[in-house]
View (tube, rainbow, N blue to C red):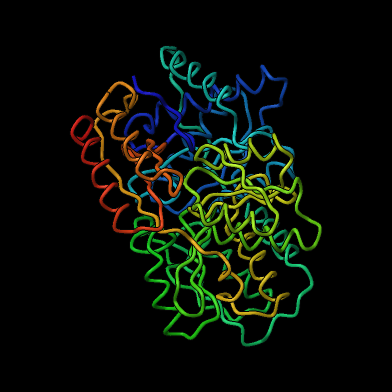
Length: 448
């Protein structure tokens, strides 16, 4: 039986193992037992995105928790970071997010947060996974439980928290922001927050129907946002993903910017104001060499972590940093929230832009990125690359060719059956050729 937890919780096609109703109910029941073993009262907050499978998965989780003697509270449709915030604020022993982030609507997932609003550790995941697999053999069936009824005031509390995060800056009446809500969890709350703050807001892809989440929109498809920004002559476009834990940017010229730009801007902004702790920023192996060089030029160290925002957070806590994130758009402001929050990140970037009194292109234009290519290879099984001498030899040869003037990173996706090949260097033609060579070798031995 395959492993349940990946780099971002449990994720699968909804209705298929391990996201079938019986397994989900067992997960809820075994989570209660784990919490009780840790001396915690089993009170669990649940939030979800807009996928059509969300309601029945939430019902199954709640039924399992109740069968174990625990209590659940539903926050309804709400961003991932809101569950983190509300879990901490109301002292729940755990928070559960039902979402598959940027994946298509047929997929869904379960992410679990601790009472501190932090994604549970690998050690907790292993304990829970073992308990779930053993728990499935228990003979007593778990019923469907009481109907789930969301508490709307919880979303209001998170909205008020966000409003309070934009420090006192003058917002021009004509400053226009286009929000791509990805037909996901930010569809109501993000436009509301920006309207309340006084921005001129143009929301797009904010009409979820259960099946259109992430469909040709959101952070995976920012070119659609770019067209809207240029057509509206807007000052900024912001793209969220399905659960709004990441944000990408389109400047007023229609140029698409990523999480590396966020880290570069915020590192300088926070350093100048004495807010940046440890003199360092945490990113992952996927961040561009240009970010490393740009931060070094302003006296900030870049520390790399494994891919996955939970590993970014672990490294931040290890070195005492309060800013970290991923090129994909997850950004963690640890003084305010211990997980990626796309809407909070948006407000932080607007604060920096307004204080500097520059355009968004002027704000982020100081980062000079090296050309980078990212190729995906669909694999039938995630075997250790070291088992294949030709794959290892090809990696070594490519790294020798790059010889300190670029980087090669080869890894498996934590959420999909993919091997990811990333190469960056100043010579775009060369890295395209090298990436094609690497992917063909992987496909030969591991491809479907």
